[in-house]
Amino acid sequence: MAQKNWTREQTIVALSTYFNIPFNKANNSNVEIQKTAKIIGRSINSVKMKIGNFGSLDPELKKRGIVGLTGASTLDKEIWKEYSIDKEKLAFDSTSLIAKFSDKPIEEIIEIPETDLPLGLEKLQEVKVRINQYFFRKNILGIYDNKCCITSLSIPQLLVASHIVPWSKDKTNRMNPENGLCLNAIHDKAFDNGLITITKDYCVKLSSALNDYHLDKFAAKFFKSFENKKINLPERYFPNSDFLDYHNEHIFKK
Image (cartoon, rainbow, N blue to C red):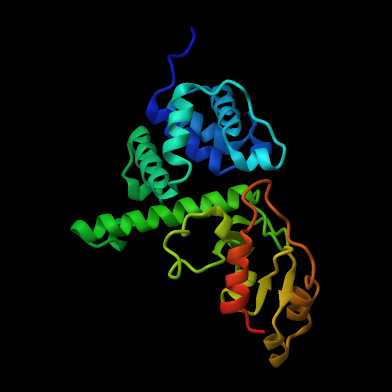
C-alpha cells in the first residue's frame, strides 16, 4: 500500500538529514538516512528520494554542477525557503521533532545529562546552545564525510567541528557551515591557538611560533608533513574566504 503524503514534521527532519550527509553519499545504505527513515516512519528509499529533491533546490550544489532530483514538492520548497538559511531554527525544530517522534526527552537526543543543566528559563537557553553545537558538529562532520580535512583521520571521537571565526566572535555565522572545518583534536587545538591556519587557496600554513618549541619527531611530522598541503574540501559549503582572512589576520601567529 502506498504511503501517505509527507507531513511538514517529517519533511523538516529530512531536511536536517540533508544538511548532515554528503550529497553523493545519499543512498539506501547510508546510516543517517536509515536512522531518519526509522524515526519518522518512512521507507529508506523515500527518505533518499527526499534528500535528492532537496538537492535540486540547493544553490551550493548548482555551483558545483551537481543536479538533484526533479520531484521537489510545494512542501519541500516551502520548508527549504523557511529553514535553509536559518540553521538555528532548523536545529531546534528538527531536534525537537526527533525527540517527539522517538518519544524521548530532547536532552537524551543531544546526549547531555539532565544533571548538567540549570533550571527554568536558563535551562531552555542552555538546551538551545547545546542543540546548536550538536547540530553544527553533525553538519560539519557530515559534509566532510567524517574525515579530518588535513589528515583524513576518520575516528569520530577524535574529530572536532572547528569554527574558523570563533563562536564568541560572530553570532551571525555560528551555524554557517562555511565557517566550519572538520579537524582532528590536535590540529583543532593548534588552529584555535593560531599555530596553524588555512590560506584562501585552502592550504595549510604553519606559524613561526612552532619554531619556539622543541618538537619531537612525531610532533614535527604531524605538522611539517602537512605544510603547504591543500586540505580535503567538502562537496559543498567550502570554507569562506572572508572567514579564512579573519583567522589569518586575528588568530594566526605569524
